Length: 77
Image 1 (cartoon, helix red, strand yellow):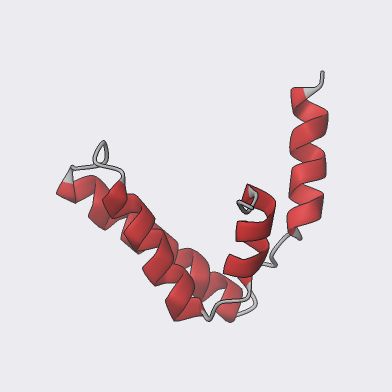
Image 2 (cartoon, rainbow, N blue to C red):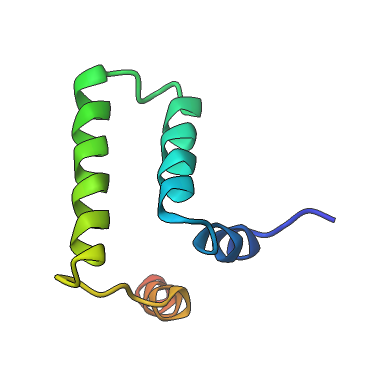
């Protein structure tokens, strides 16, 4: 039985911050289309800035279910 994207996402959200960052980096590395080192560095800085903003309480996360509900509403228009 294969896991759905929703299952994988829920499991990934249970990881520590460092593990999520490592996973994100791995997924970007797997995608050979990325390739440009400057773009990769910029994304890494952006990811770290977003994690820092959440850790410092400057922004709040949005629950997965809420994001998916809003995306489905937009896509079904």
